[in-house]
Length: 230
Image 1 (cartoon, rainbow, N blue to C red):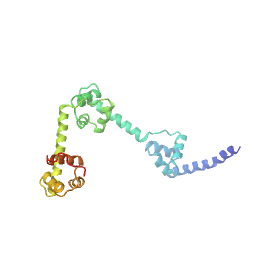
Image 2: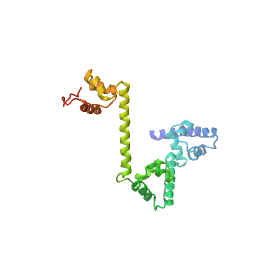
Image 3: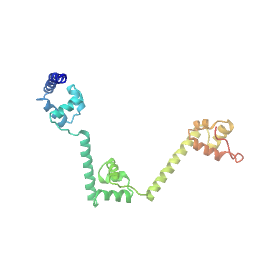
Image 4: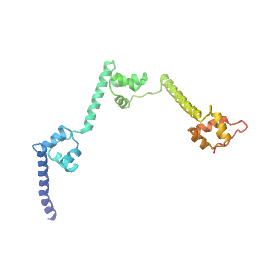
């Protein structure tokens, strides 16, 4: 009996809240609450959070009103994202067909796997963004089985250029400190002044691994096992 009384007592409060929201919708220029939600949520795709803020209620109340009034969900950003993705896929597939391929997968296999085209090249020819190509490749199971000679050569050139830049940076640091080469520097700091490896490394701004290797090559053959733990 007590439970029935609590439920009956709650109806006036809900009715008052609903009336207040209807008044709020009319204040905003709509015929009723249903018209307001249809315009804001379905037509203009406002978020539930924005609508709740507009009405002065919680998001749970807005969700309940939407369901109670039979207003469907528009899907929001996810739906638009899926639509854009589908359009990009169709555009890429159509372009692959124009180029004489039976499918988009066949195109990607030829260009990416067999000819080792770069992703920017694929995107440019297909007329889509690079992110689309990056999504399509794993999605269609297209990958490079092994690096081609051109890719291997390009990688080697990249590594060589990186090594050159590192060497130039180290030499610039030695020059700034007043030395023409590393041997002169080590003779002064490490041998002459007795600096620790940590102090030398800090001043040269180099890695410990590289510095230890250089010291091993620099030290005299009379000292085959120098102490490099300092």
